[in-house]
Length: 60
Length: 486
Image (tube, rainbow over all chains, first blue to last red; front, side, top):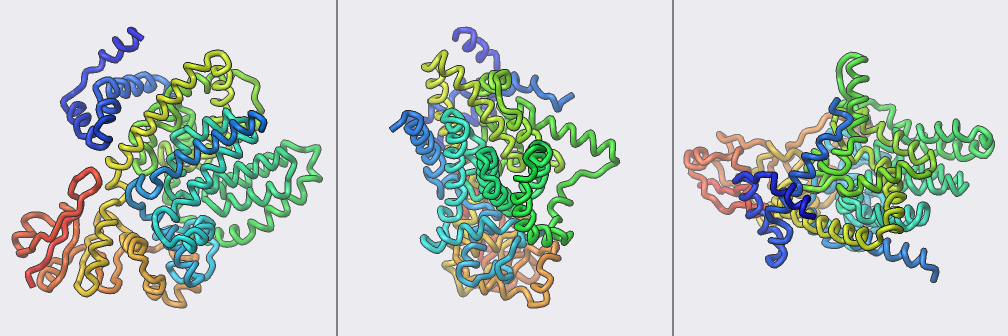
């Protein structure tokens, strides 16, 4: 778990990412917004995309 | 009650809930193809003709191409019972998707039903009116019946699936040929089913002989020399097997995907690999490899809608791995499924708001405005949204005769030979076309368009008065309604 959390922190968030988090929070019921849209969820998506981009048989 | 039946009922109810919850509100709005399907059902119900005036068509003209009519025929019942609206138009797709969960659960076990019930791709295509989703369920019913030796019924469902969507029209005969080759010892038993398939397919094949009917395929096929085409085919084909496309990135078409989840959840790659290593029927691989062909022969890089049956095969593999994982570690598996459902909820929220303009939410409000101004000239710019008239007809439930009267008897006699399409329309007090500033700004009218169609300079130059902005669900202004000073 510690490893995963430290891995997540590698991804730097740009001002655009932070703006998007704020915008997207409006789309959820207020008590849930911070749970679904926060720095960790965005970092996780970035990490997921980065890792999976190495496994693309069509890219060769 | 046996526990397997209880599990199947639970999985079916979960699948149904994920498909019908807020069905008419999410995706917000209606896409033009959906409006076409719903309005065709409405038109068939009231006149026995589609919106062009063709009586009981085998395929219906879909703007510049032709689409399968089966979805509209089956939607006549909900539209007749509950009226024409978003819910009744999408209901058939949601029911098909829920039935798929049940059928897969019965055929391959509750874990397969569970994977199909919660996988994003199957939920997404069940939440909007996609003929591909109906065709998928019919095809899977056909395959399940085939393996249960109900061959004639299987052939009938296979034929129906070909009537429901273009991709199945291509793969249904290929599947039949493979079965013919696969079951050499039982060819005598296959004779009657093959005959049923051929006879029931004849009307569709006859119609498909018209080049105009295959216009969409010509538009989507790739150009170049044979080696180039072969390389493109291989590249496209591999794209449908790419873990990146299957478990991480959404379909690049924003109208056919959730914003942040892919075909399956990212963690499903682990049970997928385990499923590959387990003992499984070769026919699952056959289904996967054949079903990718309709997607690979078109130039779009990764189009999930064209290869849906392949994802069912993959879901079966994932379910085998998931079952092994669940036996060893039940609690972590349950936790990760719960987290995935939370991720799905998050994506449903994003889909509803962030993609509302893609799904034409603004045209729903525009239709209300147009409906409340029946006696004034309304000019709507259609530079961005081409077949706009069908959205207005859908929302305002225009009498089908209004649209049908635009086509002559001689045009209808040659119904399946018209690939041409004009998105301009003059219906009642409404003109849908690019704005002609010289003519339109000098008479009393409402001018409607987006920021690109009507610039601030044009507003001040022609002394236009802003009546209102039409926003999407996220609050971004999309259409401006202006009134001329005359």
